[in-house]
Length: 328
Image 1 (spheres, helix red, strand yellow):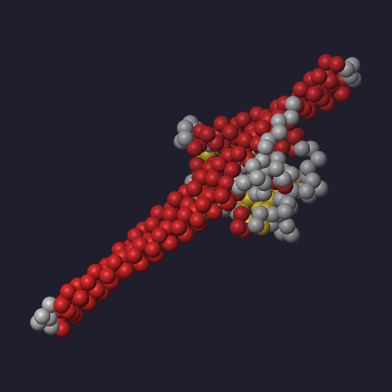
Image 2 (spheres, one colour; image 1 turned 180 degrees about the vertical axis):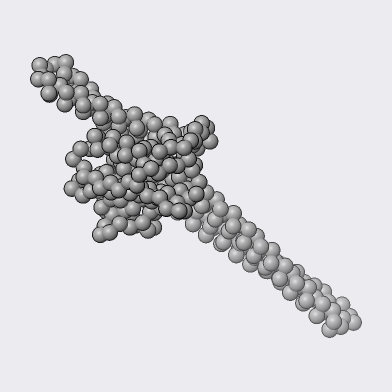
């Protein structure tokens, strides 16, 4: 059953911006009207006092000067109070506007996330269901049965990885993850993750440069998920005929784990935003690559969990390099 999602013709962000500028214009106009009204009232009061002085015998010049000075002080007082009010109003308006925009963008990212998760959940379920129905309804040869079962297994592994990402994101956000840091054989772990990846995508060419006997004090499950998500990200965006390169090396100061692809690359303006939760470049209804916007977010959180860095740089001649750097 297909579920049609109705798309609103009004962009909430644009609507908020329009309302914000209308309200801001109204408040500025109200301030100008208030200032002009007070000025007129001040002038009228001063004029009445001048007329009274003129009607009073023995009025000297100093009294006129004092009255005019008082009028000028009131004008400056009105202007100072108005500018202060307007300044505070602008600060509050900017804060509220930015908060609303941030909330709307986050809400939009959540909506995209739900659409992506729905799609990511439906695909392996539909494929597995179709394979099982085929096995039940048809008489197939042993190799065909094995192929269908292998396809079903791959789809359930995708489903398991998605559920793990969602669960881990919730645990890390709530600081509820049970730490199990230990000294791990990082070189062997990287090789094992790459082997598992190659079994899932046997046609993808891999270039592997892993330095032997690298030890690291880390959480083994998180480090596995870090590399798995980086490999999955490269696999999504890199052309199928191009290789993915994995480098692991250690020097006197740091451990460096890199995943290099030859995809379209990430513009410099997007390199920090891609680590935001639910964030994906483009629009969910138009982008072709699958995903939920959690993979790179989790990679960043895992790096921070290990007091390490996850950096993005350009690959040559094209593509992206993700570099995990653990200092010691």
